[in-house]
Length: 158
Image (cartoon, rainbow, N blue to C red; front, side):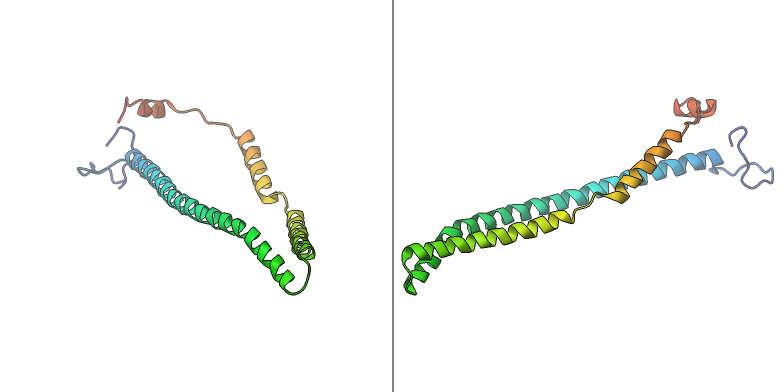
């Protein structure tokens, strides 16, 4: 047992072989906690990496679907205009009605977008949490390391 270390049994008996001091137990616990944090970070990175791959795949599929849908709009527009002509309207009025329907749809979607944008608020809780953390860190004062901690960190004592 190291000099000055407390005897875990408090009986004054010599330590058993392989028995560790409180300092050694604390150092082992610190190392285990550090390893656990590193493992948790590695797990989070792996999960995020997998989610990003899935997100990219979904984004590419959505983009291709959007391009195909966008390419179909002129065809459907012509089909609607010629369909109205088949009902007895002149070709000019048919195209004007289809164009007006698109403008009406665009106006409706624009109004929905404006309504959604008006509901956006700043992140109050996040701002308050960040300000509280900054305030705590401003008032925190580091404690100087003891000579023993410095020696242990430099490997002078085991």
